[in-house]
Image (cartoon, rainbow, N blue to C red):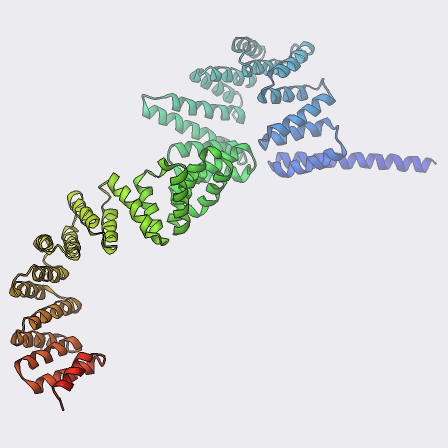
Length: 566
């Protein structure tokens, strides 16, 4: 019987030791800043020991660090209900109630505790803080000042006074008290956090002296950096750093800080806005592959920024060459929030996305709005004019070419005049085409295509053939590339043939053939020239040469037969 009793005591003691060890492990995880692991372990521990006040208080602290105030409040409440005289439980539960907005209950709990512990300076400071949260400013000031006088050797009184002045927007006095708290305890991270926040407020409040505002921003960043140096897992420091960098348009630095915050607190309330800041920053620095996941998160989870996130996602889809996705997103925005797509650059992206995803008709209308709003968008104006030209919307094309010439002073003017001439010619307005084509040549006489167009336009107006031929001779004298010379020679020989100027045709084709003996058309026109002047043998020779170079030339085959060439 005694052996059984001894075994029971051993088992009981062993169980107590095992549970104690479990809680020690939780505390160790907490000390190592491994809060998520600590949360899992403390939950397991509390399943078997639901009334362990130390475990309940530790759970509250863990969830406070994880930025889960509701869970923290739940555990502090359980600890307080377990032992209403425990000072730590009273303070933490009251603080959590106050932060949750239940000021009445927080004040009642602290009042009862102070009646039992009138000399406890920390309870009095907490009471003053609770009054401050409840907007009882004058009462809070009295309590906090009285508590600080009780013990000026601790930083808590200066922290509380700093909070008092902060709530009243007397930021310089708040700063002084936070700095005094840090002097007393340089490793007081709560004081450094509040000093960083007050510097940020001072910077925002400074509307006259930009240099001073920037100095305050820098000091705020320095304090957050000092916190991170002392505790690299201090999540809020990364969030606040990222926010300051974001508003300072230092987007690459913002991304680094916000990434770290999201890694440390992926499920915290601030993680939502952190992802939104990160999404915007990543889009601004061109890191669209990473931005995409954060933008989709914002669209799904933040109603107030959904359309803005869609816009940034559309821009990123365009940058990533996902043109169909970009077009679809822009189309949705035009329906839901058209004002967001009134930016000229976004109209351009939308228009180009439509073109590159196959909807040219809609693209034309979108791009027209862009250039009608902003006539300095020269490249888009040019591309749109070309779209109009290829779609045979000649009047619109000519309008945009003229607008380009009026607004875009660059080296492309001669080319634009040529394209406008081509459009006028296609629109059966050759007389107008002649005018702008001559203007093109006066600016740049090296554009060979212009000579061909001008010659064709002159011919269409009924001008003497010699005028067209003279233009083409000018083109030949400036054509350097074989392809350009071939095009000019082709039209030149064609006009000579139409004018039945066979001697000139033979001479021109002969010169052509000398420069390009592999050109079947040169041999063909040379044969026609010889045939025109009655030199049958030479004509046969060059018809055969043309067929050798291009067996598909049926006209050469037909003429050989007609001439009865041997």
